[in-house]
Amino acid sequence: MSLATLVKGLRIRTVGLVSVHVRHYAVSGKPIPSQDQDQIHEFEDQKEEEDTVDKMRNKSRLGPRAYGKMHKLAPQLTDDEKQVYSLWRLRKLYGNYGSASDVNVGLLWPSKQEMELQKEKERVTYPDDIYRMIEIDKLQRKEEEVKIQKRQQELALKVTKLEDWKREVRERYQNKLRLAQEAKAKKEKVIEEIRQMFGYRIDPKDDKFKEALEKKEQEEKKAAKAAKKLKKQQKLIAEIHKMAGEGNARIEGDNTNSKEGGVETAPSTHSFSETKS
Image (cartoon, rainbow, N blue to C red; front, top):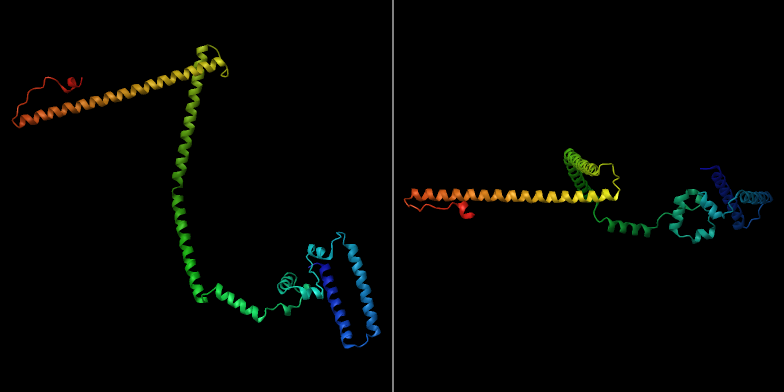
């Protein structure tokens, strides 16, 4: 707490004592002694002087409320404000600033009606008794522990698979790098072949080079297409030979079975391959 706050608190207490003293004489109807009058006048003059000094110190030119809010000083309520302010606002003021707010603490205690309403609210909000709430809390804690254990097991299983995932990532990276290097080497080889065809080093951005490169790519595409077609034909021929061999083996097997059964069949003058042709 700063020194200015302490001084201000002392001033507030002094003002309160003087006010009580003056009110005592006003209520009792007794005249104020000259000695007390001199003290009251002296205090009033001192208070006016201090207020003038405070105004001169306030270079921000803020009002009392804004200045107090900026410096986190408790607002000093008048008697009328204390009568008009709601109870929850006075409670909030005392909760923020404590005794410096000059609020009567006895007024802040909840009334019987408020206590009954609070009890009814607790009965509606928490219908179970304390033992049932403890049991529910234990069950919830067990469920949370089961979830945590299950999650930890899943993480442990994933950690065991981490090395496999790393290896797969490295393999994919190596494959991409290899394909990129092969494509680069192939492109450089094509460029070098085109340069050798021209007989001198030609700029790849030249139109002649681009035309030759396009022609070279078309030739490679035709060659790849022809190789693919030849491979397909070879596969088809292999399948035909396989089918022909299976057919001849089936015919020979039928002839053998017929001879063993005592039935003579006419010799075939044409083989399966000749009939197929």
